[in-house]
Length: 169
Image (cartoon, rainbow, N blue to C red; front, side, top):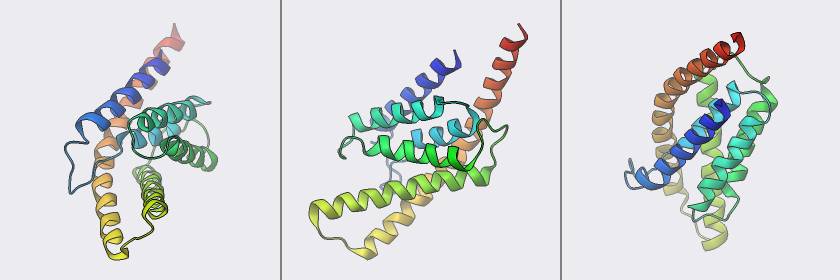
């Protein structure tokens, strides 16, 4: 049951991100909300669920993206696999620093890959504008990450309560 709810939340966040938030840019930056959920899911859920949801979120993002197909699948899966590799499965709580660090690693990987795609397509990059754009992307996504950190902690506390109630019965 929780798995289906997580799929629904990933779907809703992706739809909100590609439809509504894409029109409401902050300093020209659209946050990547499903990436924050993938980070939180990988911390709290056991087994292959986080990896499957990361691939699902990446697939949905790729459907609506101008990037080469598979770009977001690889991005979300690599962040999820890195967290899973460095931390044990199903942690009890997520520190703010850990959430932010892995979220910013994902955002940095996203930005570097975007720059690589632009370079391969056009062949010219202005280093000065790239650096300031990178700082803007990090700051806007870090602000969204702050909000989503507290929401995801609240959500996973509720999920644990539901799972404990189901185990008792």
